[in-house]
Length: 189
Image 1 (tube, helix red, strand yellow):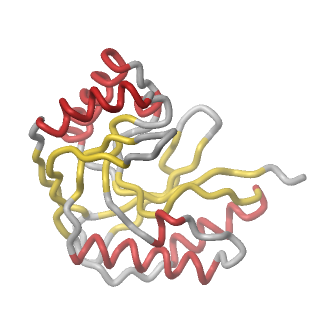
Image 2 (tube, rainbow, N blue to C red):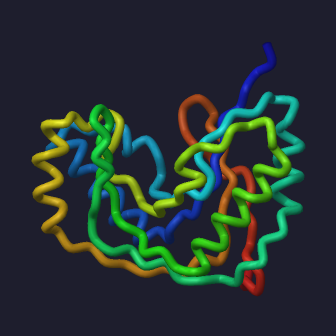
């Protein structure tokens, strides 16, 4: 069987916001025994992780480079904490306020991906986009989730950043790495 590679497409906030989000992840690790989120850089997923055979790597890079995205740079607003109440894998995240730029960007990426990689079944999260920045998931126990949720829903966190590009990432079996960057229309380099 061909070697498979794991990829996803995301927005990555500037370093000051990444550092703040990482501090929340560290709090979950230390106080709620939820460590998995620390293994992934702070991000907003635009296209959920997907697998492609190693031989398709070049095709993916070419598709990403030739994408036509008709979205100008826009602003993202982060606004407090919320949760996905999954029974076995609850998630606590920083809420991202949906706006036209974010909606259009994600929609155009998914539409193009579905056309070019029609053989990959789309994830529900790709089709029902709920932008967020995860701070705890996978190893957050239901008990810790309940306790943390009460605390974090009362906590206030607000930040704003401008989106001028988005990223294609690949997993190297240890961590995610940015392998390509797509600048938005009119983005200054």
